[in-house]
Amino acid sequence: MSENKKVDCFNHGLRNRAFVCKHLIRGDAKGFWEPFDSDPTKQYPDGELNAWCDECDKILMKEGEWNEKSETFAQIQLICDECFFQMKKLNSGSSNYNNGI
Image 1: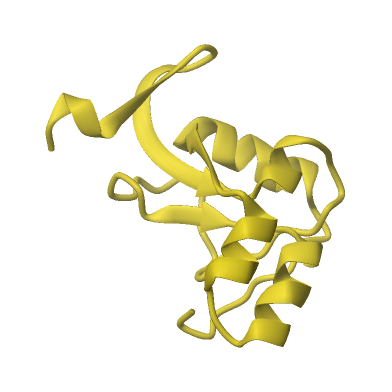
Image 2 (image 1 turned 180 degrees about the vertical axis):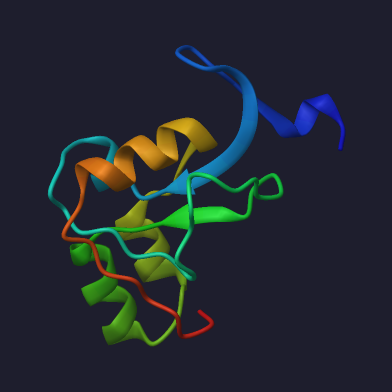
């Protein structure tokens, strides 16, 4: 894995990339949907971790897939894997979405 595929996080240094909707970055208790139930004690390949909030999930369900409308609403943001798991904790009471989307 090349170093240019890592993210240089202000808080955690050089880490694997993860992706979340803008709403998870801006608040807590937003719900936490992910394509599989991730575990902070495991290592994941760079870029494999991704999540979205309840509001994004409503749009995703209405659209039936990630498309221009759902992606525009989500405004996916790049974060590090450590920040990802911190956001997962902040948004507990979370949901897990595993429908292959």
